[in-house]
Image (tube, rainbow, N blue to C red; front, side):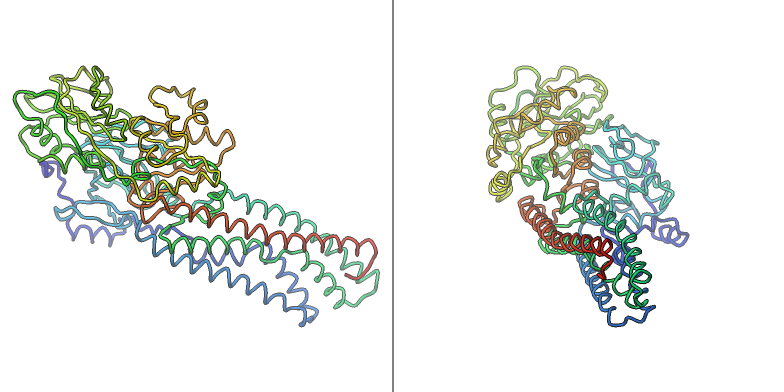
Length: 615
């Protein structure tokens, strides 16, 4: 295990884990993806509508108007239906949530194990790799990583974490691999609240609910004075009995209340969530259905979304040899000691035979910002692996460019006798080889994109890959205006606002630029949905109006997204869009009936007040 025992990376044994659990030194945090039963009861029972109806109910009971209490059965039935519906939705959502329940790799009893994050105990040894989210405050005991602390600080620049460096819960691993010993658990963690917010339903602004609440507040302000005036007129001006005064006033007030409207909205959304859950779509935020129905721009990440993310090495071109050591042997040693594990390195792992011919003395993990990684070997030199245009800056081969234009990815391997540093430009490298990798297109991708186009939803492809590769994939997928592409490495921050509307395909995009693209689209009035699966998508997912994650993606992307596609297929998004529009349209139509009745009753009550007529 790469001599990790020398760094005390054996981990806790079973007895030590149990001792810490008994002492309460574990996370012990249940993190449901849906409402609790208490929240469901509270949200459906303790409402302004129910409160006003309850006061009217009490007033009628006090005058023994028993025959006029039937309306309360409707209120109870409505609340009961809402509670049962949401509980059924909760059970189904929680069942599906198990499939995306956050787990983490730890060392226990000298072996690598997978445990739920709430089972982490103090002094546990976490194994953190690219795509993982740090679930507890910890300190690095071996290895090095690049961490993204944007969810904590808002800064997207990666932070290098070496031995003895402190890791904050809530941050994400961009690249590299390390072993980190847990320093804090449970409420002691720096970002416990952030992790909980990432797991539970995120409260979102709903245009539908905001409109309902505004009408409710206006109605409530009118109900109280009108009710008092009607009661006084009946009791003192017309000398009606107390029973008649209470009954006539209550009749007017009950007519003004659009009973069950807000509850109906929640039930409709919960129904939509339940139907989508049966189609393997996990909706972690109830109101994201409504949000998605308003979307007019859909931003897609190429790898893992349009393509399935399963890459394969198709060709290898040799351009140089070092010390008569075959390039395959060099790559075998490189991959043996590399800590990178993204889909590109996984494809190379399957292609090359690993070995220990060379001895590493320094590693620089891959970064989506730099587009390269490197390992310096003892008495040999430094091998750099990365995007072809980063390694082969001069005399870029024509045949490689032809493959890129066909939608394939080109990864180059370069060599230098010098040491390289992650915070300095690369020295001139001697090219050793170029690997051509292919990425499979998902089924029904073209039909899905055609559907969005017909529905008036503009599609934009945002990727960190070479722009011509992305454009070729987009053309094959049937993306409209695929010929409008731009290399974002040539675009300054100030220019992003001017290119987002003009172009469809964005290549060589950094994580920060992905976020800026989403924000600039929102500034000009668009409702933006973003799909993604990796840590490089986190900032954009967080900024989007509706965030959609792929189940096979990183834990961090699934935790902050409102919708998770459990079958890893973005072609089911039309179902989500249709469900959202169906719910919004149905609620809007029914709301019109409620509002007409409310307005009619208010006007009639005002006439009765001015004419001193019984309601």
